[in-house]
Image (cartoon, rainbow, N blue to C red; front, top):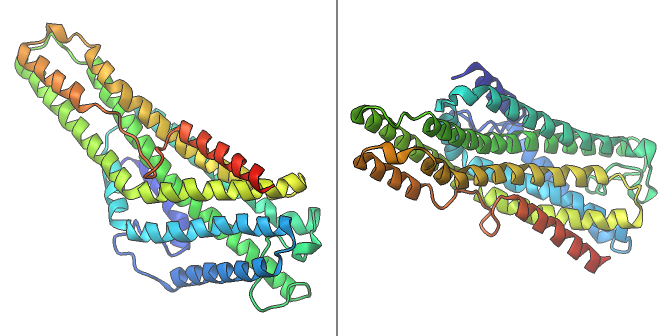
Amino acid sequence: MDPELDKIFNFLRRPLKLLGLDVLDTNWKVTPMTLFIMCTFAIQHYGSFLFLKTHLDSFVVFTECFSTSGVALEIVIRMGLLIYHRNMLNEAFEAIGNQNFKKLAKEFYKVVSLSLHMIAGIYLSTMMFELIPIVYPDPRKSNLPLATYIPHLPQDAAPYWHLNYVYHTFLNLICVMFLVAVDGILVLSILAAVYQIKGLKLCFQELDTGAEQSELRQELVRICKTHQTIKNFIRLLVQTYYLDLLIDFGLVCLILCMGLNVIAVDIMQPIGFYLISVAFQLFLLCLCGNLLLIETDSLSNCVYSIDWYLMPVAEQKMLKFMIANAQPPQVLSGIFMPLIMSSFMSVIKASYSYFTLLH
């Protein structure tokens, strides 16, 4: 495996190891840390339920709790899907490790590294939420960062206030670490498919159409096999991530809708950090999905643009098969919505529409 790619893999696996969720290890088993993380979120959901029941008369705090609980719900569901799809994830990682990006390797690693650092930076910005008790204390939440408490404990007196504060900080940190890893893996996988297709186009552009028939046929057979391998890899990604993307589209819409209701009442509310992070998450995934759509859609044009008329008839038929096999374009989807930029805009519009109905 390329050292640069190995470095990226280690960067993505590190937070999963800390959380006891490194399913990319073929010998992974449920550990005490795994159970502890799951119990933490179970307590969080129970605490959110109790908080919502007792704050029905406070619209802003109620919607804020609903919005942040949506993030926790996304984490729990995606944790379950990560464990359930661990075999396919390992297969996808192995396929990425076996890929050869040739002349595009430097550009690929640069784009992946930039994307992962952007993900980490934006997600870590949500830790600013922990400064709320200092810069924007809210008595309706007992001056705590999140609109939820540890169940059946006082929250407005020491040491219970400090215990709740540590609990909120720990929850935020878990969410950040987990999302950096799982979204980073998804972005890496999509970009790997994108650059494999770019490499395939480069092979066609460098193809010597005037070469001897045996050499030309051998090269075309190799290209056809490479293309089929790429299509199989994209199908694997679709099977692995279609439920994850469905959860993303649905819960991001809910989180944005509820969060906008909080900001509409008081624009200084710090929940804006969450909303920016959530919107960026969907934006980056849709952007990568859009790049995949563009590359796969233009592949058939790239094949047709070479000097195919100089080739023997048998090889021309192989190109015809290649053009047909490149259609329709490949795209990931969350069952109901494809992972493209128009879907991102649809989610944003839907969130705003539901916000105007509620507010």
